[in-house]
Length: 287
Image (cartoon, rainbow, N blue to C red; front, side, top):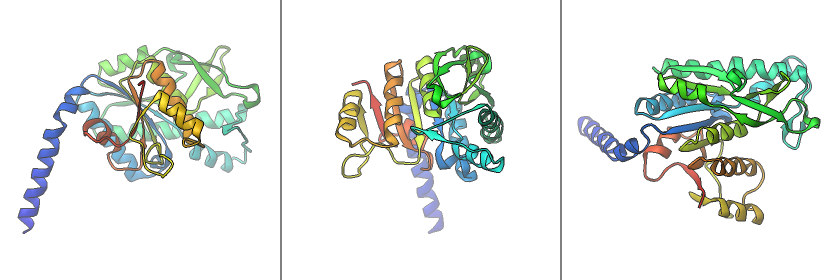
Protein backbone atom coordinates (compact mmCIF):
# COMPACT_ATOMS: atom_id res chain seq x y z
CA UNK A 1 0.00 0.00 0.00
CA UNK A 2 2.84 2.38 0.88
CA UNK A 3 4.52 1.75 -2.48
CA UNK A 4 1.25 2.38 -4.35
CA UNK A 5 0.82 5.68 -2.47
CA UNK A 6 4.37 6.71 -3.37
CA UNK A 7 3.76 5.83 -7.02
CA UNK A 8 0.61 7.96 -7.05
CA UNK A 9 2.56 10.85 -5.51
CA UNK A 10 5.29 10.57 -8.16
CA UNK A 11 2.71 10.42 -10.95
CA UNK A 12 0.94 13.49 -9.54
CA UNK A 13 4.26 15.34 -9.33
CA UNK A 14 5.14 14.42 -12.92
CA UNK A 15 1.69 15.53 -14.12
CA UNK A 16 2.06 18.85 -12.30
CA UNK A 17 5.43 19.46 -13.93
CA UNK A 18 4.04 18.56 -17.34
CA UNK A 19 1.05 20.89 -16.94
CA UNK A 20 3.40 23.69 -15.87
CA UNK A 21 5.41 23.55 -19.11
CA UNK A 22 3.42 26.21 -21.03
CA UNK A 23 3.75 28.60 -18.08
CA UNK A 24 7.46 27.88 -17.72
CA UNK A 25 7.88 28.72 -21.39
CA UNK A 26 5.65 31.77 -21.03
CA UNK A 27 7.81 33.32 -18.30
CA UNK A 28 11.25 32.51 -19.67
CA UNK A 29 13.13 35.80 -19.65
CA UNK A 30 10.26 37.64 -17.92
CA UNK A 31 11.02 40.20 -15.22
CA UNK A 32 9.00 39.56 -12.06
CA UNK A 33 9.24 42.06 -9.20
CA UNK A 34 8.19 40.59 -5.85
CA UNK A 35 7.36 42.67 -2.79
CA UNK A 36 8.19 40.40 0.12
CA UNK A 37 6.72 41.42 3.45
CA UNK A 38 4.26 40.56 6.14
CA UNK A 39 4.57 37.79 8.71
CA UNK A 40 6.35 35.47 6.26
CA UNK A 41 9.51 37.55 6.72
CA UNK A 42 9.66 36.72 10.42
CA UNK A 43 9.11 32.97 10.06
CA UNK A 44 12.23 30.92 9.28
CA UNK A 45 10.31 28.10 7.56
CA UNK A 46 8.32 30.50 5.37
CA UNK A 47 11.48 32.44 4.57
CA UNK A 48 13.18 29.23 3.38
CA UNK A 49 10.12 28.28 1.32
CA UNK A 50 10.07 31.71 -0.32
CA UNK A 51 13.80 31.48 -1.05
CA UNK A 52 13.39 28.07 -2.71
CA UNK A 53 10.60 29.44 -4.89
CA UNK A 54 12.75 32.39 -5.96
CA UNK A 55 15.69 30.14 -6.82
CA UNK A 56 13.44 27.79 -8.80
CA UNK A 57 11.96 30.74 -10.69
CA UNK A 58 15.43 31.96 -11.55
CA UNK A 59 16.52 28.46 -12.54
CA UNK A 60 13.77 28.18 -15.16
CA UNK A 61 14.55 31.55 -16.72
CA UNK A 62 12.49 34.06 -14.75
CA UNK A 63 14.34 37.27 -13.79
CA UNK A 64 13.18 38.04 -10.23
CA UNK A 65 13.77 41.25 -8.29
CA UNK A 66 12.96 41.11 -4.59
CA UNK A 67 11.89 44.30 -2.79
CA UNK A 68 11.30 43.86 0.92
CA UNK A 69 9.77 45.72 3.82
CA UNK A 70 10.63 45.43 7.49
CA UNK A 71 8.22 47.47 9.59
CA UNK A 72 7.97 45.04 12.55
CA UNK A 73 11.76 44.70 12.74
CA UNK A 74 12.15 48.49 12.67
CA UNK A 75 9.57 48.85 15.44
CA UNK A 76 11.41 46.27 17.54
CA UNK A 77 14.76 48.00 17.17
CA UNK A 78 13.30 51.46 17.88
CA UNK A 79 11.76 50.05 21.07
CA UNK A 80 15.11 48.56 22.14
CA UNK A 81 16.81 51.91 21.58
CA UNK A 82 13.94 53.78 23.28
CA UNK A 83 13.33 55.94 20.20
CA UNK A 84 9.74 57.12 19.94
CA UNK A 85 8.09 56.65 16.55
CA UNK A 86 4.93 58.35 15.35
CA UNK A 87 2.66 57.69 12.38
CA UNK A 88 0.71 60.20 10.31
CA UNK A 89 -1.81 58.82 7.81
CA UNK A 90 -0.31 55.33 8.18
CA UNK A 91 3.22 56.56 7.35
CA UNK A 92 6.09 56.60 9.82
CA UNK A 93 7.39 60.06 10.71
CA UNK A 94 11.10 59.66 10.00
CA UNK A 95 13.55 62.07 11.58
CA UNK A 96 17.33 61.64 11.34
CA UNK A 97 17.59 59.41 14.42
CA UNK A 98 14.78 57.18 13.16
CA UNK A 99 16.30 57.12 9.67
CA UNK A 100 19.57 55.74 11.05
CA UNK A 101 17.67 52.83 12.60
CA UNK A 102 15.53 52.29 9.49
CA UNK A 103 18.61 52.06 7.28
CA UNK A 104 20.45 49.81 9.71
CA UNK A 105 17.54 47.38 9.94
CA UNK A 106 16.48 47.38 6.28
CA UNK A 107 19.87 47.40 4.55
CA UNK A 108 21.56 45.35 7.24
CA UNK A 109 19.51 42.89 9.21
CA UNK A 110 16.50 42.26 6.95
CA UNK A 111 18.20 42.52 3.56
CA UNK A 112 21.04 40.17 4.47
CA UNK A 113 18.69 37.58 5.96
CA UNK A 114 16.84 37.35 2.65
CA UNK A 115 20.09 37.27 0.68
CA UNK A 116 21.44 34.51 2.88
CA UNK A 117 18.22 32.47 2.60
CA UNK A 118 18.33 32.62 -1.22
CA UNK A 119 22.03 31.79 -1.36
CA UNK A 120 21.55 28.81 0.98
CA UNK A 121 19.02 27.42 -1.51
CA UNK A 122 21.57 27.56 -4.32
CA UNK A 123 20.82 31.00 -5.74
CA UNK A 124 23.13 33.96 -6.24
CA UNK A 125 21.57 36.92 -4.49
CA UNK A 126 23.10 40.32 -3.85
CA UNK A 127 21.61 42.84 -1.43
CA UNK A 128 21.39 46.54 -2.10
CA UNK A 129 19.11 49.52 -1.64
CA UNK A 130 17.63 52.15 -3.89
CA UNK A 131 20.50 54.44 -2.87
CA UNK A 132 23.04 52.23 -4.65
CA UNK A 133 23.95 53.60 -8.09
CA UNK A 134 21.12 56.13 -7.57
CA UNK A 135 18.66 53.42 -8.60
CA UNK A 136 15.83 55.25 -6.83
CA UNK A 137 15.94 59.03 -6.45
CA UNK A 138 13.23 60.50 -4.24
CA UNK A 139 11.55 63.72 -3.29
CA UNK A 140 10.00 64.16 0.17
CA UNK A 141 6.38 63.07 0.40
CA UNK A 142 5.38 65.63 3.03
CA UNK A 143 7.49 67.88 5.29
CA UNK A 144 5.42 66.65 8.24
CA UNK A 145 6.73 63.12 7.62
CA UNK A 146 10.40 64.07 7.55
CA UNK A 147 12.62 61.72 5.57
CA UNK A 148 9.82 59.76 3.89
CA UNK A 149 10.34 59.71 0.14
CA UNK A 150 8.41 59.25 -3.07
CA UNK A 151 10.39 57.78 -5.99
CA UNK A 152 10.61 60.28 -8.86
CA UNK A 153 13.48 58.81 -10.87
CA UNK A 154 14.20 55.09 -11.11
CA UNK A 155 17.22 53.92 -13.12
CA UNK A 156 17.27 50.11 -13.20
CA UNK A 157 20.33 49.57 -15.44
CA UNK A 158 22.28 47.90 -12.62
CA UNK A 159 19.41 45.48 -11.98
CA UNK A 160 19.34 44.44 -15.65
CA UNK A 161 23.11 43.92 -15.57
CA UNK A 162 22.81 41.73 -12.48
CA UNK A 163 20.19 39.59 -14.21
CA UNK A 164 22.48 39.22 -17.21
CA UNK A 165 25.08 37.46 -15.03
CA UNK A 166 22.57 35.34 -13.09
CA UNK A 167 22.36 37.45 -9.92
CA UNK A 168 19.07 37.95 -8.06
CA UNK A 169 18.79 41.55 -6.75
CA UNK A 170 17.35 41.98 -3.26
CA UNK A 171 16.33 45.60 -2.71
CA UNK A 172 15.83 47.49 0.55
CA UNK A 173 13.26 50.30 0.08
CA UNK A 174 15.55 53.26 0.66
CA UNK A 175 16.03 56.10 -1.79
CA UNK A 176 18.59 58.80 -2.44
CA UNK A 177 17.65 62.47 -2.12
CA UNK A 178 18.83 65.21 -4.43
CA UNK A 179 20.78 66.83 -1.59
CA UNK A 180 22.43 63.69 -0.27
CA UNK A 181 19.58 62.66 2.01
CA UNK A 182 18.48 59.10 2.64
CA UNK A 183 14.73 58.54 2.28
CA UNK A 184 12.55 55.86 3.81
CA UNK A 185 10.20 54.56 1.10
CA UNK A 186 7.10 52.42 1.57
CA UNK A 187 7.97 48.90 0.41
CA UNK A 188 4.95 48.51 -1.87
CA UNK A 189 5.61 51.93 -3.40
CA UNK A 190 9.26 51.06 -4.04
CA UNK A 191 8.34 47.72 -5.61
CA UNK A 192 5.77 49.36 -7.88
CA UNK A 193 8.18 52.07 -9.00
CA UNK A 194 10.94 49.56 -9.76
CA UNK A 195 8.53 47.26 -11.61
CA UNK A 196 7.30 50.16 -13.75
CA UNK A 197 10.83 51.31 -14.56
CA UNK A 198 11.81 47.78 -15.59
CA UNK A 199 8.56 47.25 -17.57
CA UNK A 200 8.11 44.06 -15.57
CA UNK A 201 5.81 41.31 -16.74
CA UNK A 202 4.47 40.83 -13.22
CA UNK A 203 4.43 42.71 -9.93
CA UNK A 204 3.66 40.32 -7.08
CA UNK A 205 2.60 42.04 -3.85
CA UNK A 206 2.86 39.45 -1.07
CA UNK A 207 0.76 40.31 1.95
CA UNK A 208 -1.06 38.65 4.85
CA UNK A 209 -4.44 38.22 3.12
CA UNK A 210 -5.55 36.00 0.26
CA UNK A 211 -6.22 38.92 -2.10
CA UNK A 212 -8.85 41.54 -2.83
CA UNK A 213 -12.19 40.40 -1.42
CA UNK A 214 -15.74 41.21 -2.47
CA UNK A 215 -18.58 42.28 -0.18
CA UNK A 216 -19.18 38.67 0.95
CA UNK A 217 -15.53 38.01 1.75
CA UNK A 218 -14.66 35.96 -1.34
CA UNK A 219 -11.41 36.62 -3.18
CA UNK A 220 -11.86 38.37 -6.52
CA UNK A 221 -9.42 36.63 -8.84
CA UNK A 222 -9.59 39.01 -11.84
CA UNK A 223 -9.73 42.79 -11.71
CA UNK A 224 -9.15 45.73 -14.05
CA UNK A 225 -8.14 49.31 -13.31
CA UNK A 226 -11.77 50.36 -13.81
CA UNK A 227 -13.19 47.68 -11.52
CA UNK A 228 -10.66 48.60 -8.80
CA UNK A 229 -11.83 52.22 -9.00
CA UNK A 230 -15.48 51.15 -8.84
CA UNK A 231 -14.98 48.80 -5.86
CA UNK A 232 -12.97 51.43 -4.00
CA UNK A 233 -15.72 54.01 -4.53
CA UNK A 234 -18.28 51.49 -3.27
CA UNK A 235 -16.20 50.84 -0.16
CA UNK A 236 -15.61 47.17 -1.01
CA UNK A 237 -11.89 47.85 -1.31
CA UNK A 238 -11.03 49.67 1.90
CA UNK A 239 -8.46 50.11 4.66
CA UNK A 240 -5.01 48.70 4.08
CA UNK A 241 -6.00 47.20 0.73
CA UNK A 242 -6.41 50.66 -0.85
CA UNK A 243 -2.68 51.54 -0.94
CA UNK A 244 -1.89 48.10 -2.35
CA UNK A 245 -4.39 48.41 -5.19
CA UNK A 246 -3.20 51.98 -5.78
CA UNK A 247 0.37 50.68 -6.09
CA UNK A 248 -0.78 47.97 -8.50
CA UNK A 249 -2.72 50.42 -10.68
CA UNK A 250 0.15 52.93 -10.77
CA UNK A 251 2.57 50.17 -11.78
CA UNK A 252 0.29 48.99 -14.60
CA UNK A 253 -0.11 52.54 -15.86
CA UNK A 254 3.68 52.78 -15.76
CA UNK A 255 4.14 49.79 -18.04
CA UNK A 256 3.81 46.64 -15.90
CA UNK A 257 1.79 43.98 -17.72
CA UNK A 258 -0.17 42.89 -14.62
CA UNK A 259 -0.01 43.05 -10.83
CA UNK A 260 -1.10 40.39 -8.35
CA UNK A 261 -2.00 40.74 -4.67
CA UNK A 262 -1.56 37.39 -2.94
CA UNK A 263 -1.01 35.75 0.43
CA UNK A 264 2.70 35.42 1.15
CA UNK A 265 1.98 32.98 3.97
CA UNK A 266 0.55 30.39 1.57
CA UNK A 267 3.07 27.69 0.60
CA UNK A 268 4.60 28.24 -2.85
CA UNK A 269 2.32 31.22 -3.51
CA UNK A 270 4.61 32.70 -6.19
CA UNK A 271 4.93 29.39 -8.03
CA UNK A 272 1.18 28.81 -7.94
CA UNK A 273 0.56 32.27 -9.35
CA UNK A 274 3.07 32.05 -12.19
CA UNK A 275 3.05 28.39 -13.17
CA UNK A 276 -0.51 27.12 -12.69
CA UNK A 277 -3.77 27.85 -14.46
CA UNK A 278 -5.73 29.00 -11.41
CA UNK A 279 -3.13 31.35 -9.91
CA UNK A 280 -3.00 32.27 -6.24
CA UNK A 281 -4.45 35.73 -5.66
CA UNK A 282 -6.12 38.77 -7.21
CA UNK A 283 -4.67 39.75 -10.58
CA UNK A 284 -5.14 43.31 -11.80
CA UNK A 285 -4.77 44.17 -15.50
CA UNK A 286 -5.22 47.34 -17.50
CA UNK A 287 -8.56 46.25 -18.93
